[in-house]
Image 1 (cartoon, protein in one colour):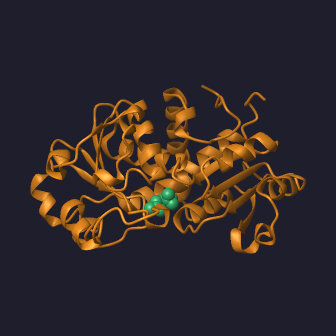
Image 2: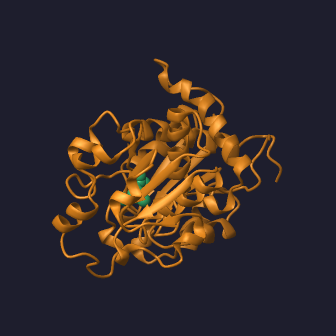
Length: 310
Ligand code: NCD
């Protein structure tokens, strides 16, 4: 494979398994650059990448920006508070004005589902979805796949259990599709109030009992409760949530010997995951963060590859 089929990266729903493998292989070859003392190579010199973040972000924004800089692209960042959106400009107008300055890629995070898809329809630059509402977060799913493949040497046949706020988590939606497309068995677990009734159609099974869901897992991924997206309280208290669905040291006796723990961040320590679990030698959470830069370098490289057909 020499190119991705689409000009944009909008969601795992649109990527085929061969394209996913192609992205992971590219990221693997680029990761070595991040270990060098001088972490910069020239392939995207003269290219411009705009980061449009309309929602808070630490990891994802920094990761995209570093990825662009490692490849020598020029980068510019705009956040909601400093954009003309606060003056009443529409998203499309903002995008068209940015486009008029000829960027090559726009990376966008937005609280509205479908915002990057809308952008992609109206502008010529490539668009990468860095998280749209509760819908998708494809680059997170790709770095999760990368981290699992790096650790286990494969993805196919592994059992992934995702625990938490499945309904409001774009990471869960992208990961369910990503891991099931690559042949893993995905189980989701969480309070019934945070479980969409049709979630199994994305390629997973639902188990409400945490002990049952953790049995046989090779990977356990905890998710943050997305309080900012919930219209009302979906569980009695954080303490009760932590008691029923929180991952604490009592789960260690239930897990397979080589089971690893993941989290997309930011962690609410003591709610979905206790410090003993987050900082244990089973945790690959910080590897996920490191790998995020390599995966995003791969996305930029592949979207701007000269061999890609228009
Ligand atoms: C997630 C997000 O913003 O969707 N974080 C991330 O990008 N690493 C998860 C979250 O906010 O809980």
